[in-house]
Amino acid sequence: MNDTICAISTAVGVGAISIIRVSGEDSINIVNKIFDKDLTKQPSHTINYGHIIENNEIIDEVMVTLMKAPKTFTREDIIEINSHGSIATTNKILELLLNNGARLAEPGEFTKRAFLNGRIDLVEAESIMDLIEAKTDNQRKLAINGINGNISKLIKDIIDKLVGINANIEVNIDYPEYEDIEVVTKDKIKEISEYIEKELSKLLSESENGKIIKEGINTIILGKPNVGKSSILNKLINEEKAIVTDIAGTTRDIVEGQIRINGILLNLIDTAGIRDTQDKVERIGVEKSINLINESDLVILVFNNNEKITDEDIKLLEKTHNKKRIIVINKIDLDNKLDLNIFKDEEVIKLSALDNVDELKEKISNIYNLEELNNKDFTYLSNSREISLVKKAIEVSKNLNESLKNNVPIDMLEIDIKEICEILGEIIGESYDDKLIDTLFSNFCLGK
Image (cartoon, rainbow, N blue to C red; front, side):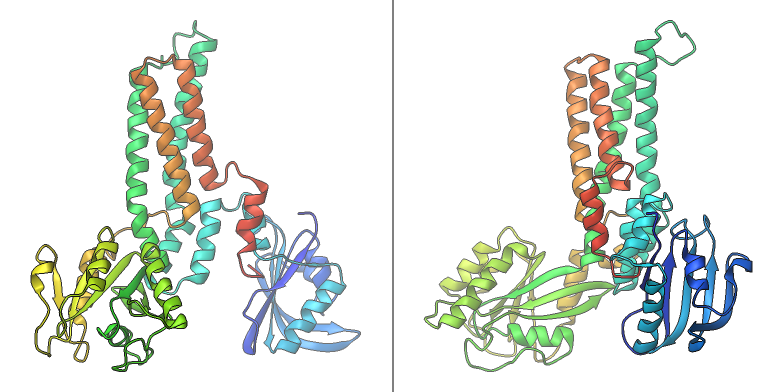
């Protein structure tokens, strides 16, 4: 943390502008060695025109942004050099910075310094990466909510209530003679505990929305060979991506595509047709298809209107019974030979993939309330680390309520309250493991 780091912050390749970022206590002095204007005489938060030079040779005409600590992203002195965007020029400027005392930053190290220096918390840091990777407007909104601290504020409010009641418990125990301090009763602890469990449970229940917004809906299209799975995929993504023939077993491996429905990504996988086969390659594809059932959020189970129900169809219905699924009867333009009574307890969509799949898209939207999801405030948890910690805090909260029912002494209840505080503190980074932090920030891009 005492050295000065630098990295290219823009994408590698030819562009109009490249940005090389420098952060650390020696940033100004290092850049001064290669810039033809004295930055030590310039006020903070200014943009300065000049040239990057080496041995009196002009390397590039640049704009240099000067930002002095502590009002910067990392709370250190930061310099950003805006150069022309050729690979050769950008790399040359980076080389000069390294030769003059800077160190190449590790992936995510600028954001890591912002976190370690108290500029942002861990939820905000993770949301920055989510914003960089956002592919939809809803993903952007979700990330901005995290960056703005809306989730962090909710967690901090709960922590503050717990810390306050714990402080009162300790005062009651250590200084019983203080009459002006509120006496913490078990009823008071129960009230706080129930409030916390309610708030955390609400946050957790809505976290599925955050997961859907961030990761999309993983959807597999499943069925026997030749029921029209590939045609449905092609119609959904409006692209001839999967090969369509009347030969059974054409699709031997998974074929993937993406569409957006009401701003939410639908990650589609067309699978190999499910059947017993002696073909080794096709058999591997069938096994992959079966394994994907457990990993999927949604199953589109396709049947051929022109064929009678088979044992393979029955097996697929059984295998997907506990999954969120949509039953699709395809090829309704052909004669009906399929006994629809077998689907009497389920909603069925009848279509011809040769025409359109609008009804299928609408059904997916209705199942996940995607239209309503667009109108919410996006204050959701969105990654597995945060969600797992909230689950852990809820379990401890339940233990606390159980202890209250069993008349456990108040000073013992304090242990559970402290544990909940520590768990919630991990979410926002008030307490953390160094290895976790290193791993988390290593997933960031270089220069961020």
